[in-house]
Image 1 (cartoon, protein in one colour):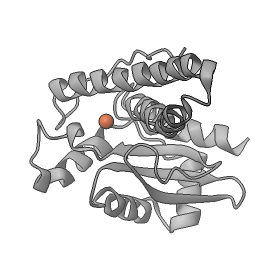
Image 2 (tube, protein in one colour; image 1 turned 180 degrees about the vertical axis):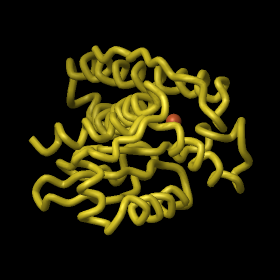
Image 3 (spheres, rainbow, N blue to C red; image 1 turned 180 degrees about the horizontal axis):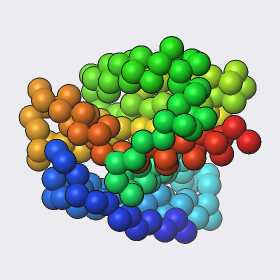
Length: 195
Ligand SMILES: [Fe+2]
């Protein structure tokens, strides 16, 4: 069984407490459905021949719910502790090495956030090539990069900002989220991924 995590999210400039409250409910939904799918698969396996299509579709569906759960855990963790810089971190050094500067990374990442459609803007770390990569994930699961570590991500589904901004103003939500994040969280993820 997957358990929903509890998060302590401080007040955020530009993202309302109501948005966070409703968003946390959606997160709980992903946890619930990841568990439900596993339970259903368990039931249906008593007759795999008869239930072949159902099992196939549930297996396909699982990554959506599981990745939806995990993406949101990363997202809310990044807000815990409030805004903090981590200029001396290994991650900052790596951003400078791979992108030229933190600002250059940020410019590329903000462009990634503006990708049309629903999904996630993610900074990944590829241990195989020792590279940071900015890449988009459609929905919750389509485009997750095999074996790469999730270092930092922004939810670009409309439910993340629609109570606070119009779709045309989603850039303001991105700015608010980026300003509110605890960079020590991502720095720690990077340190772990490097091991
Ligand atoms: Fe979300």
